[in-house]
Length: 169
Length: 144
Image (cartoon, rainbow over all chains, first blue to last red; front, side, top):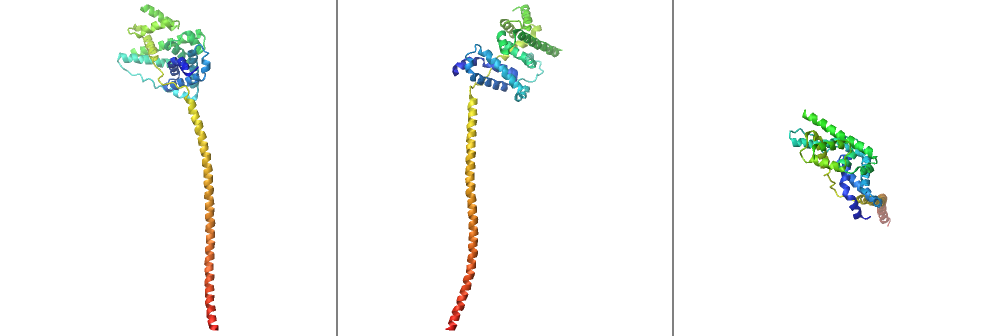
Protein backbone atom coordinates (compact mmCIF):
# COMPACT_ATOMS: atom_id res chain seq x y z
CA UNK A 1 0.00 0.00 0.00
CA UNK A 2 1.63 3.22 -1.07
CA UNK A 3 0.99 6.69 0.20
CA UNK A 4 -1.68 7.78 -2.27
CA UNK A 5 -3.65 4.56 -1.82
CA UNK A 6 -3.42 5.01 1.90
CA UNK A 7 -4.66 8.59 1.76
CA UNK A 8 -7.54 7.60 -0.49
CA UNK A 9 -8.69 5.14 2.13
CA UNK A 10 -8.18 7.19 5.26
CA UNK A 11 -8.78 10.81 4.33
CA UNK A 12 -12.57 10.65 3.80
CA UNK A 13 -13.22 10.15 7.50
CA UNK A 14 -10.67 12.57 8.95
CA UNK A 15 -13.40 15.01 9.98
CA UNK A 16 -15.28 12.27 11.77
CA UNK A 17 -12.15 11.32 13.66
CA UNK A 18 -11.57 14.94 14.53
CA UNK A 19 -15.12 15.50 15.74
CA UNK A 20 -15.09 12.39 17.89
CA UNK A 21 -11.77 13.45 19.38
CA UNK A 22 -13.15 16.89 20.05
CA UNK A 23 -16.26 15.45 21.64
CA UNK A 24 -14.11 13.54 24.09
CA UNK A 25 -11.19 15.91 24.61
CA UNK A 26 -13.22 19.15 24.44
CA UNK A 27 -10.42 21.45 23.30
CA UNK A 28 -9.89 21.94 19.59
CA UNK A 29 -6.10 21.88 19.87
CA UNK A 30 -6.14 18.59 21.73
CA UNK A 31 -8.47 17.14 19.15
CA UNK A 32 -6.22 18.27 16.32
CA UNK A 33 -3.21 16.71 17.98
CA UNK A 34 -5.15 13.52 18.54
CA UNK A 35 -6.23 13.38 14.90
CA UNK A 36 -2.67 13.88 13.73
CA UNK A 37 -1.40 11.25 16.12
CA UNK A 38 -4.03 8.81 14.99
CA UNK A 39 -2.97 9.22 11.38
CA UNK A 40 0.63 8.53 12.34
CA UNK A 41 -0.56 5.32 13.91
CA UNK A 42 -2.65 4.37 10.92
CA UNK A 43 0.26 5.03 8.60
CA UNK A 44 2.56 2.92 10.71
CA UNK A 45 0.12 0.02 10.60
CA UNK A 46 -0.66 0.52 6.93
CA UNK A 47 0.20 -3.08 6.09
CA UNK A 48 -2.53 -4.30 8.38
CA UNK A 49 -5.03 -1.79 7.08
CA UNK A 50 -5.09 -3.45 3.68
CA UNK A 51 -6.60 -6.51 5.33
CA UNK A 52 -9.34 -4.71 7.19
CA UNK A 53 -12.74 -4.64 5.59
CA UNK A 54 -13.90 -1.60 7.46
CA UNK A 55 -10.99 0.76 8.00
CA UNK A 56 -13.27 3.55 9.13
CA UNK A 57 -14.71 1.57 12.02
CA UNK A 58 -11.20 0.49 12.95
CA UNK A 59 -10.02 4.10 12.92
CA UNK A 60 -12.94 5.26 15.03
CA UNK A 61 -12.19 2.56 17.59
CA UNK A 62 -8.58 3.65 17.64
CA UNK A 63 -9.65 7.26 18.09
CA UNK A 64 -11.90 6.32 20.97
CA UNK A 65 -9.15 4.35 22.69
CA UNK A 66 -6.55 7.00 22.07
CA UNK A 67 -8.79 9.70 23.53
CA UNK A 68 -9.47 7.55 26.58
CA UNK A 69 -5.73 7.21 27.08
CA UNK A 70 -5.29 10.93 26.73
CA UNK A 71 -8.01 11.57 29.25
CA UNK A 72 -6.46 9.16 31.67
CA UNK A 73 -2.96 10.53 31.32
CA UNK A 74 -2.12 13.33 33.65
CA UNK A 75 -0.95 15.54 30.85
CA UNK A 76 -4.38 15.91 29.43
CA UNK A 77 -6.32 16.11 32.64
CA UNK A 78 -5.71 19.83 32.91
CA UNK A 79 -6.73 20.49 29.37
CA UNK A 80 -10.05 18.74 29.53
CA UNK A 81 -11.34 21.29 31.96
CA UNK A 82 -10.78 24.19 29.61
CA UNK A 83 -14.03 25.13 27.97
CA UNK A 84 -13.01 27.82 25.58
CA UNK A 85 -15.20 26.98 22.67
CA UNK A 86 -18.42 28.62 23.63
CA UNK A 87 -19.36 31.83 25.30
CA UNK A 88 -21.22 32.40 28.51
CA UNK A 89 -24.92 32.31 28.08
CA UNK A 90 -26.10 35.85 27.56
CA UNK A 91 -29.50 37.11 28.51
CA UNK A 92 -30.98 38.47 25.36
CA UNK A 93 -34.55 39.11 24.43
CA UNK A 94 -33.81 38.41 20.84
CA UNK A 95 -35.53 35.21 19.86
CA UNK A 96 -32.76 34.19 17.50
CA UNK A 97 -30.14 34.65 20.15
CA UNK A 98 -32.15 32.49 22.46
CA UNK A 99 -32.39 29.86 19.79
CA UNK A 100 -28.63 29.88 19.31
CA UNK A 101 -28.10 29.61 23.03
CA UNK A 102 -30.37 26.63 23.21
CA UNK A 103 -28.45 24.94 20.45
CA UNK A 104 -25.26 25.61 22.39
CA UNK A 105 -26.94 24.24 25.46
CA UNK A 106 -27.18 20.90 23.72
CA UNK A 107 -23.40 20.96 23.46
CA UNK A 108 -23.05 21.55 27.17
CA UNK A 109 -25.59 18.88 27.98
CA UNK A 110 -23.76 16.29 25.91
CA UNK A 111 -20.61 17.40 27.69
CA UNK A 112 -22.14 16.28 30.96
CA UNK A 113 -23.12 12.82 29.76
CA UNK A 114 -21.05 9.79 30.71
CA UNK A 115 -18.21 9.08 28.26
CA UNK A 116 -19.89 6.08 26.72
CA UNK A 117 -23.15 7.86 26.01
CA UNK A 118 -21.19 10.79 24.65
CA UNK A 119 -19.45 8.57 22.13
CA UNK A 120 -22.60 6.79 21.10
CA UNK A 121 -24.61 9.95 20.59
CA UNK A 122 -21.72 11.40 18.62
CA UNK A 123 -21.54 8.35 16.40
CA UNK A 124 -25.27 7.99 15.90
CA UNK A 125 -26.86 11.41 15.93
CA UNK A 126 -24.03 13.42 14.46
CA UNK A 127 -22.10 11.00 12.29
CA UNK A 128 -25.13 8.82 11.50
CA UNK A 129 -23.48 5.43 11.61
CA UNK A 130 -25.78 2.44 11.69
CA UNK A 131 -26.04 0.33 14.79
CA UNK A 132 -23.94 -2.49 13.48
CA UNK A 133 -20.97 -0.20 12.92
CA UNK A 134 -21.38 1.50 16.28
CA UNK A 135 -21.39 -1.87 18.01
CA UNK A 136 -18.08 -2.67 16.38
CA UNK A 137 -16.56 0.70 17.22
CA UNK A 138 -17.44 0.71 20.88
CA UNK A 139 -17.30 -3.05 21.28
CA UNK A 140 -20.75 -3.40 22.82
CA UNK A 141 -23.86 -5.47 22.20
CA UNK A 142 -26.61 -3.86 20.09
CA UNK A 143 -29.07 -3.79 22.96
CA UNK A 144 -26.55 -2.08 25.21
CA UNK A 145 -25.89 0.52 22.54
CA UNK A 146 -29.60 1.15 22.16
CA UNK A 147 -30.10 1.51 25.88
CA UNK A 148 -27.21 3.95 26.19
CA UNK A 149 -28.41 5.96 23.21
CA UNK A 150 -31.95 6.10 24.47
CA UNK A 151 -30.76 7.20 27.87
CA UNK A 152 -28.57 9.92 26.38
CA UNK A 153 -31.36 11.26 24.17
CA UNK A 154 -33.85 11.29 27.01
CA UNK A 155 -31.41 13.05 29.33
CA UNK A 156 -30.70 15.76 26.81
CA UNK A 157 -34.39 16.28 26.12
CA UNK A 158 -35.37 16.44 29.77
CA UNK A 159 -32.58 18.85 30.59
CA UNK A 160 -33.59 21.07 27.70
CA UNK A 161 -37.21 21.14 28.84
CA UNK A 162 -36.11 21.91 32.38
CA UNK A 163 -33.90 24.78 31.28
CA UNK A 164 -36.56 26.12 29.03
CA UNK A 165 -39.29 26.13 31.64
CA UNK A 166 -37.00 27.99 34.01
CA UNK A 167 -36.31 30.49 31.28
CA UNK A 168 -39.98 31.13 30.61
CA UNK A 169 -41.25 31.47 34.15
CA UNK B 1 -44.88 15.23 7.35
CA UNK B 2 -47.92 15.10 9.59
CA UNK B 3 -47.57 16.12 13.17
CA UNK B 4 -49.01 12.87 14.47
CA UNK B 5 -46.50 10.99 12.47
CA UNK B 6 -43.66 13.12 13.78
CA UNK B 7 -44.82 12.57 17.34
CA UNK B 8 -44.78 8.85 16.80
CA UNK B 9 -41.30 9.00 15.32
CA UNK B 10 -40.08 11.13 18.20
CA UNK B 11 -41.25 8.51 20.66
CA UNK B 12 -39.37 5.86 18.76
CA UNK B 13 -36.39 8.18 18.58
CA UNK B 14 -36.25 8.53 22.34
CA UNK B 15 -36.27 4.77 22.69
CA UNK B 16 -33.47 4.55 20.13
CA UNK B 17 -35.58 2.44 17.81
CA UNK B 18 -35.63 4.68 14.77
CA UNK B 19 -33.76 3.75 11.64
CA UNK B 20 -31.31 6.12 10.01
CA UNK B 21 -33.92 7.02 7.38
CA UNK B 22 -36.46 7.91 10.03
CA UNK B 23 -33.91 9.98 11.84
CA UNK B 24 -33.11 11.84 8.64
CA UNK B 25 -36.82 12.55 8.23
CA UNK B 26 -36.93 13.93 11.77
CA UNK B 27 -33.83 15.97 11.11
CA UNK B 28 -35.39 17.49 8.02
CA UNK B 29 -38.60 18.33 9.83
CA UNK B 30 -36.90 19.95 12.81
CA UNK B 31 -34.33 21.95 10.92
CA UNK B 32 -36.70 23.38 8.33
CA UNK B 33 -38.43 26.02 10.38
CA UNK B 34 -42.01 25.75 11.62
CA UNK B 35 -41.85 23.36 14.56
CA UNK B 36 -44.77 22.64 16.85
CA UNK B 37 -44.12 24.48 20.13
CA UNK B 38 -44.33 21.38 22.31
CA UNK B 39 -41.57 19.76 20.25
CA UNK B 40 -39.27 22.77 20.33
CA UNK B 41 -36.54 20.99 22.31
CA UNK B 42 -36.03 18.50 19.49
CA UNK B 43 -35.40 21.38 17.13
CA UNK B 44 -32.53 22.49 19.35
CA UNK B 45 -31.12 19.00 19.41
CA UNK B 46 -31.30 18.37 15.70
CA UNK B 47 -30.06 21.83 14.84
CA UNK B 48 -27.08 21.19 17.04
CA UNK B 49 -26.42 17.80 15.46
CA UNK B 50 -26.52 19.27 11.97
CA UNK B 51 -24.36 22.26 12.91
CA UNK B 52 -21.77 20.08 14.58
CA UNK B 53 -21.35 17.94 11.53
CA UNK B 54 -20.09 20.98 9.64
CA UNK B 55 -16.97 21.18 11.72
CA UNK B 56 -13.94 19.94 9.86
CA UNK B 57 -10.32 19.23 10.44
CA UNK B 58 -8.60 22.07 8.64
CA UNK B 59 -4.95 21.27 9.18
CA UNK B 60 -3.09 19.14 6.70
CA UNK B 61 -2.32 15.65 7.83
CA UNK B 62 1.32 14.69 7.87
CA UNK B 63 2.31 11.09 7.75
CA UNK B 64 5.80 11.09 9.21
CA UNK B 65 7.18 14.37 10.42
CA UNK B 66 7.92 13.03 13.87
CA UNK B 67 10.56 10.71 12.57
CA UNK B 68 12.60 13.49 11.02
CA UNK B 69 12.22 15.54 14.16
CA UNK B 70 13.58 12.67 16.20
CA UNK B 71 16.40 12.10 13.76
CA UNK B 72 17.32 15.76 13.98
CA UNK B 73 17.58 15.46 17.69
CA UNK B 74 19.74 12.39 17.37
CA UNK B 75 22.17 14.09 15.04
CA UNK B 76 22.12 17.20 17.15
CA UNK B 77 23.12 15.24 20.23
CA UNK B 78 25.85 13.44 18.32
CA UNK B 79 27.19 16.75 17.06
CA UNK B 80 26.96 18.25 20.52
CA UNK B 81 28.88 15.39 22.13
CA UNK B 82 31.56 15.55 19.43
CA UNK B 83 31.85 19.26 19.98
CA UNK B 84 32.13 18.75 23.70
CA UNK B 85 34.83 16.14 23.31
CA UNK B 86 36.70 18.32 20.87
CA UNK B 87 36.49 21.40 23.05
CA UNK B 88 37.70 19.45 26.07
CA UNK B 89 40.62 18.18 24.02
CA UNK B 90 41.48 21.66 22.73
CA UNK B 91 41.02 23.13 26.15
CA UNK B 92 43.37 20.58 27.68
CA UNK B 93 45.99 21.35 25.06
CA UNK B 94 45.61 25.05 25.56
CA UNK B 95 45.89 24.65 29.30
CA UNK B 96 49.00 22.54 28.99
CA UNK B 97 50.78 25.07 26.81
CA UNK B 98 49.68 27.81 29.16
CA UNK B 99 51.08 25.92 32.10
CA UNK B 100 54.35 25.28 30.28
CA UNK B 101 54.71 28.94 29.40
CA UNK B 102 54.00 29.94 32.95
CA UNK B 103 56.64 27.51 34.16
CA UNK B 104 59.14 28.77 31.61
CA UNK B 105 58.47 32.32 32.67
CA UNK B 106 59.06 31.39 36.28
CA UNK B 107 62.33 29.67 35.47
CA UNK B 108 63.40 32.60 33.33
CA UNK B 109 62.62 35.03 36.13
CA UNK B 110 64.59 32.92 38.60
CA UNK B 111 67.55 32.56 36.28
CA UNK B 112 67.64 36.23 35.40
CA UNK B 113 67.40 37.10 39.08
CA UNK B 114 70.33 34.84 39.86
CA UNK B 115 72.32 36.30 36.99
CA UNK B 116 71.59 39.80 38.22
CA UNK B 117 72.87 38.96 41.68
CA UNK B 118 75.90 37.37 40.12
CA UNK B 119 76.59 40.41 37.98
CA UNK B 120 76.31 42.88 40.87
CA UNK B 121 78.66 40.74 42.91
CA UNK B 122 81.03 40.51 39.98
CA UNK B 123 80.96 44.28 39.68
CA UNK B 124 81.96 44.57 43.34
CA UNK B 125 84.80 42.18 42.73
CA UNK B 126 85.86 44.14 39.64
CA UNK B 127 85.99 47.37 41.61
CA UNK B 128 88.04 45.70 44.31
CA UNK B 129 90.37 44.33 41.67
CA UNK B 130 90.62 47.80 40.08
CA UNK B 131 91.65 49.39 43.35
CA UNK B 132 94.11 46.61 43.86
CA UNK B 133 95.60 47.38 40.46
CA UNK B 134 95.88 51.04 41.41
CA UNK B 135 97.75 50.15 44.57
CA UNK B 136 99.97 47.83 42.68
CA UNK B 137 100.78 50.46 40.08
CA UNK B 138 101.58 53.01 42.72
CA UNK B 139 103.65 50.52 44.63
CA UNK B 140 105.55 49.64 41.46
CA UNK B 141 106.23 53.28 40.75
CA UNK B 142 107.46 53.83 44.27
CA UNK B 143 109.60 50.78 44.20
CA UNK B 144 111.30 51.70 40.89
